[in-house]
Length: 316
Image (cartoon, rainbow, N blue to C red; front, side, top):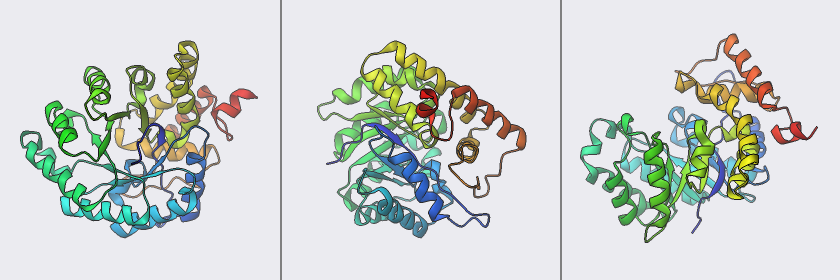
C-alpha cells in the first residue's frame, strides 16, 4: 500500500478566459511540479485546483490527463471533495479505477453545523468511502474553528477503526495541537504519517516531527520545500533557516487576508515567472488587482525566485 511522505505539491488547474480547463497548460504545470527532484507525489482535484468549482466529469478528466502526463513517474493523490458520503464514495471508486495511488478525503461541508458533536457521522462517512475502494486515504484535518476539524479523540477513533487511513493532512492551525498530532500519530500501534499543510510556519512544523508536507504553495516553491525538508531531516539547522528565510516572503504573500485568494496568488506568480500563460480563476473567485500582483512580484524578488526556479536562481 502506498504511504504518503515527503514533499507533495497540490497542483493548480489552468483555465481559458471562458473558464474551460486548459489541458495543455495544466499538463505543463503538472510536469513543472511533479518532476522536481525530491518531490515524492503530486495531488490533483484538491483546494489548489479549485475542485469546489469542478464537476464530477471534469474531476475524472483532470485525473486522467494527470496520470497520462506524470503517472508513470510519481504517485498521484486524488482529492475526494463532496458533501454527501455516497458521492464521495463515487469519486473514490472513480479514482481507483483511473489509477490514482491515494485519496485525500475532505470533510463534508455539512458537518460544519455541529458535526463535531456527532462523531458517528464522521465514522460512517469514512466507512462508506472505504467500502468503495481499496486505495489508502489521507484524512484532511481542518481547524476546529471551521466546524470541520475532527476532535482529537474522534481522530484517534477514526485512525483505529478505518485502517486504510494512512496519513492526515494537518491544517489544525494550532501549534500545540499540531505537535500533539506529530508526536502521537506516528507512534500509534498502526503508525499514521502527519503531513503538514501549515505553510506559513513550515519550518516550525517540520521540526515538530511532521513526516512530510502537502501544500498548494508547492505549485510555486516545491524546490524550496524539498530543500527545507531535506535540511530538517539532516538536522542542518543553519541550512534550514537560510532556506526558510527565502520561503518566508512567499508564504506571507500567499496567505495574507483574504485567505480565499491564496491559490489565485499562486497562479499570478506562475504567470510572472513565465510558467503559466494566464491566471484565470472560476467564479466566485476573481482576478487580483494590479497592486496585489505588484506585491507578488516583489515577494518573488525578495525570495530570489526566477523562471528556472529558486535553487537555479541561487546558483547563478
